[in-house]
Image (cartoon, helix red, strand yellow):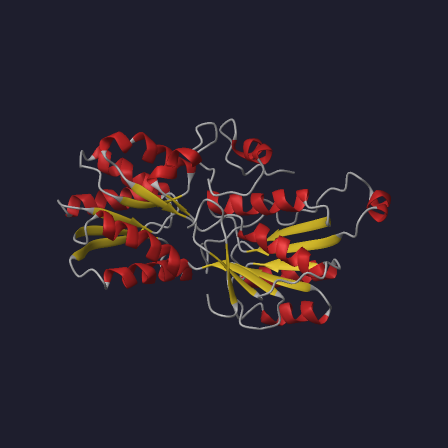
Length: 364
């Protein structure tokens, strides 16, 4: 990687989001952590910090798990004395107000996923001027007044999936594309990664593409429309989310042969992928990791402890689940809302997504 970027190893998954999106946020506007040990006990123990996180929104199961991952980490790190999670509901003015409120609480660490790279600059610089450590997550900001950033490249997300699809198709054939959300930077960047690959394969033709907002039902409807329009489809590239599960169901309902499709690490998709392998269905699950905010918290706390990373900007490799790895990640005991590429403890996974729960109840 180039000098100011650091590639973070991702264990056995060598593979988001968004934003400009695919944003994540807290279930309530502001969630202070309980202090079961009491302030006296905290004073006797190791130094602890106040952490504040300003989130964009919670719009889908991916966004819900992003916050669950963060909270799971914050609850487990003894360096965290208090934490606050705010949800801007995709409103720039509210995000600015949220950050101002976090600053007023005398936080030590400010984390944020910016809705706008420009609008938050004054309030970020205000935080820095007050000695607050600032870590940006997923989305960039147009200032150098931050201490660290952590992200994954959406363009890599699109490129990795399309490279796999092109190889599965033998470098030729007809594909359809399920895009994310129109105009959203994550969707635009992922589609740009796809185009990088398509430019190398002139014999792969894009028959049509539709926006389906990363949504299962919309993905199914979009695929039904494309199936009705095109009698021969050899592959499907999906921008991720839960759209590919809908696409598989649309192919099956139309009695059309399943072709290679790209997906993401949503448990509902992993289940339908596994259940159709005997029908010759193949896929790959790329991922915009749900643990990026948690990783940002770890980096920020390390900085507060005097252990800054070697590089200011951390870029995480896109994790991948392949056909050979599928059975290692699919979880029949957890709901379809669970995302398999997780760093949460097994206890928290079951508490959040066991017994058919969708994670929206949180850990509090």
